[in-house]
Length: 290
Image 1: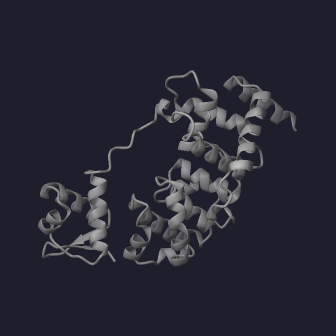
Image 2: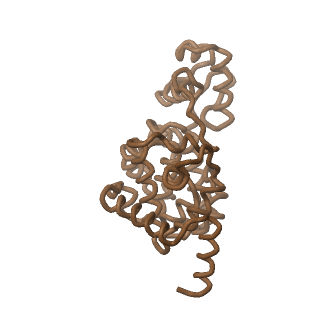
Image 3: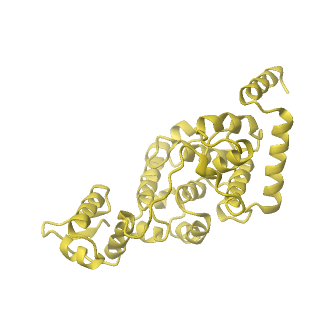
């Protein structure tokens, strides 16, 4: 180990207040858990194909692993690479995405594929700063893609990683800010094993939910998900399924079908038109964008 790296490590340990022994014990605990209990059979972990990893990371942004695991194989079979995704009919994409929710993600995923083909000759860039400029890709997802595709030594937080660090290092802290966690993620990073390290952290974080009160409730960034029943999300999902089934109708008829107030449904329809899901014909009827 170079003297420069030793100096850098000492600085990080001093800043975070943890010792090399503590870091080693933590790394060992995480990797032992992963060795025994890690989700090694997840399809997108079986190879390092950039396209499949991008698709899986976008699917996993707001959807639990079991639901993604059910949809992922069929989606990949229908759209096997960036080129196929970039020219896929939108209605077909939305149909393949059903069950995952937050359907804007698949529209952004297509835009991602178009950008890869048109601006990068079909080759995924390995710089997370570049990836973060793609549609629907924020800082955490850009880093996770860089880690899982290219094994890049990036430092980032997502919900499961946050849960692990709060549980292990902030047991007596009422409110934890991500700014306090980032230096620990950096200090505890397992060199040259970015891919495995983050898989292990995410698997441990997912498991923690089953045997301790959710540590993320103590995060300053924690937002409790609102009720789905009666929400705009529910109405959006119902409207999309209706349109995908081939229905074209005006807002009055659609309001009657979904069973919510006409003004509310009309507002949601207008929003979904702006987002590119639907178009409104001159007759006033709405239809899915093909």
